[in-house]
Length: 320
Image 1 (cartoon, rainbow, N blue to C red):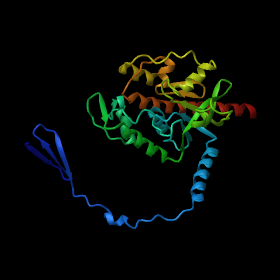
Image 2 (tube, rainbow, N blue to C red):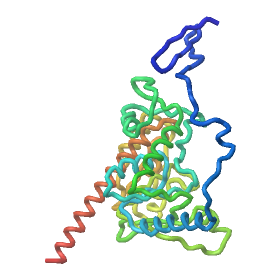
Image 3 (cartoon, rainbow, N blue to C red):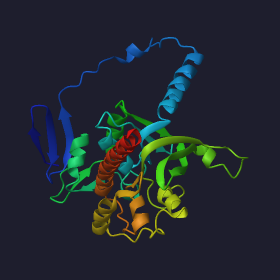
Image 4 (cartoon, one colour):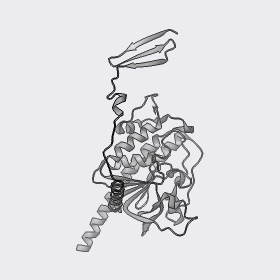
């Protein structure tokens, strides 16, 4: 087999005759440790009760702190994560994310049919750049992230490091708080409890108040589209049209177009929009999820600003 070699300052790429890369050689790697360095590796001592107290006290502090918050995002898939990323850029906006699964990320750990690559149509590649996710600029129309998990892990690790956001995973939203036809919070429970109401006696939930709920629960499924289903059941939205058959080009445009505040205090984004408005299924292309989430953040921010003005006007009336 004939080969050719291309050398850069840091790496050497050896290619076969047909142009396929067969080996990537970098500068000599010098490990930080030797194998023998681990022979006497010892952890600092700790009491089991200390671990208990650290976990419980910090989680309960978060529960107390987020019993009332600015925005609650229901669903930590690609749309919910994108919404949280955009919202929490403002350190004055406090955001709680609730995810029923132990593992956040929704369907964005893999591409279509359990393959790895994540296809994002332009111009949504600008969002990837903002988050700092590398990609292959594969076409004038789209880019490809080599593994969907690269997007999810990158945005999640950076997002959760921010001080104004808390993720409550393994937690289900069982209902909404609605007052005078305005959504004012969510009703929560441990996901395992929610899934076992039929096997146990009554296990009452908890509550979290907020100014805006962003519902990004995905398309129809065991807990999918739960936000708009509940709004439908109480007559706050028209009967759901249901997601139509796959059409990537129409679907992505429609999902972004119809992302909005559907009733006072509740924004809907991602594939849940399709269930509400009858948009087509989009399949394994992710740009609309990112931009729908981003738009939802702007819709939530607009709702917060409107509510603040209304509250100020009502306060002036009372004082007058």
